[in-house]
Amino acid sequence: MIRGIALTILLVASTACGSSKPSAGGARGRDMPSIADVLRRHTDSLMAIPGVVGVGEGEKHGAPTIYVMVERMTDTLRRAVPDSIEGYAVDVHVTGAIKAQPE
Amino acid sequence: MPRSRSSTVVTLRFALIAALAVAAGCNDSTSPAAPRETTPSLARGGQQGPDLHAAMAARAKYEARIMARHGVEGIGVGLLDDGSPAVVIMTTNGAVGGMPHALDGVPVKLMPTGPFSAVLPRKGKPGGGGGGGGGGGSADPTATFARPVPIGVSIGNENECAAGTLGARVTKGGNVYILSNNHVLARQNAASIGEDILQPGRYDTSPQCSIPANSSIGTLAQFVRINFSGSNTVDAAIASTTTSMVGNATFSGGYGAPNSTTKAAAIGMLVQKCGRTTACTHGSVASINATVNVQYDGGVANFVDQVVVSGKRGAFSKAGDSGSLIVTDDANAYPVALLFAGGQTSTIGNPIGAVLSALGVTIDGK
Image 1 (tube, chains in turn cyan, brown):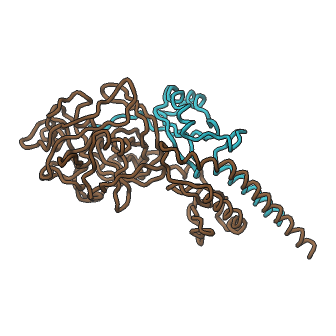
Image 2 (cartoon, rainbow over the protein chains, first blue to last red):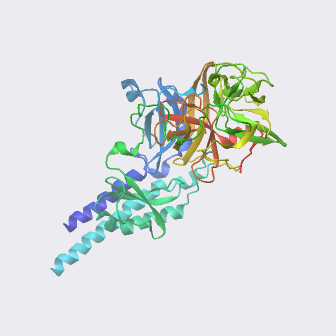
Image 3 (cartoon, each protein chain N blue to C red):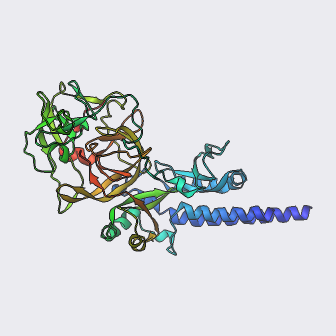
């Protein structure tokens, strides 16, 4: 029982850690580049994927993410958009085409 | 009994030390965020190392007690909407009674993580259309308003049957102007300086597309060209007007006059706008520093450094809301962005600082 609590503390400490920063996929935290640098390096290639209409800085569970807007979700997009880039989670949102909004 | 108790203490102590070690590892990986946050292009609220340490310490100190509570899924360290560190308590679903607001001075943020989809307020759109969060029995922004007209209402260029939104009244060198988009006032670069700006826009006149007498409330004064082969930051224009033609506050049901001081967008910031189509709606900033490809009649234009807003209930904006001023959703109503585009679930705005500096104007607000 007590061991269970101890385990829980450990687990929570590690999962909480995991959720308070992007899963680094082996990258060491102190080496993580800033989200701005990552966006600068990867925005063009993400925008070049057919169906991607926007790329920005987002946030999920208190951690910065790469916010990707797509016209609609397709299998091709699922394959083409990575789950994470340089340690930052990629958060995909279906927004439809972005249009100027006059009537 | 004493033996098992002491081994218990040892076990728990070990767990806490290990937890602290993990926490320290965590801290190592997040603390480089501090210098990042000072990057000028990423003004996301100051965050200092020491505060993060305080949050880590508070988390470690209280996690056993917090975790013992029913409905708590986890505990960690995160950021508040303003970027300041907090102890994040993850809950099964929504509020857990009796949770502290702060632990050793570090604010506590409750975060429901149970059903994952509940985190995102973007499920199927409500079928009815018309936009979310309208202002009850407020005025119809497409109507013809008595002069001076409020902000947030239908306007358009005399030479097209269209309608957009009067964003705000702005000033420059003692003169007053209407602020809206290039594509509302200046016909996507096609207009000449001096063309009349009408209230309402011709799309909203009766018979539709007609130009009733006395419908001009100003003349096109200046616009920032939309570049269809390079990148843009703003879709903005101003029209000369007078204080007897245009007021500086919204119609009834809106937020009133915007602040003359602006505020940079931050992720999670609560915002509102009043516009021609969906009237007054509320939302939150989902993304900043966004690069977006926007479809116009004249082609696709690339925009950088944009603000992305998600509606609180339904769409934050629809066609005809272009030109609306997006302000903070509080009594201060600080201008944050100039609305100009959107998709099914997202609205895009130009950062207001860039809009005002491109045109050399300031908000004529409270």
